[in-house]
Length: 115
Image 1 (cartoon, helix red, strand yellow):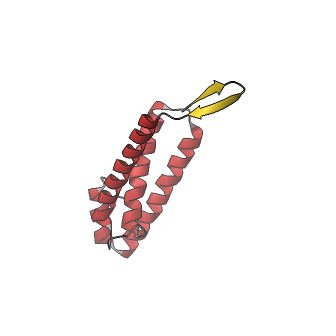
Image 2: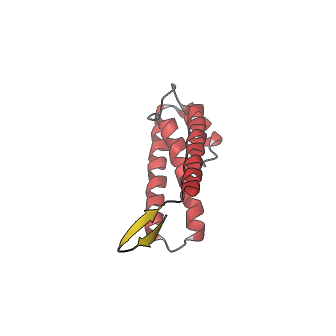
Image 3: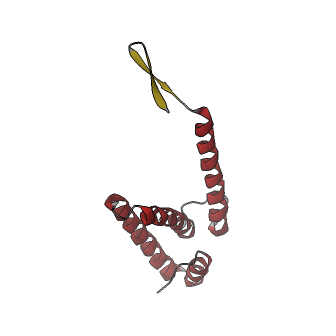
């Protein structure tokens, strides 16, 4: 997207190809996310169970970790990352209390250290 001056006014011009490409990438990410959550979901449209939430948080944590590799001084993203890790830790502790077998299954499938 860029601005083009037409006489007195400015007009926003969208690059449709990049917009479409970005939307397609987002759709692919959503499909990939649905497949990962489907492994842990208790029913078809489940996103609220601890297992599904842990899966979604893990994906967001991986994404933010990659961002932090290139932007070491981005303290706002660092804070957000630490909050996500803390939330995932609490959900993992809850899952360990309620269903330890499921806890071990989730932690090994998502490659999360438990302890």
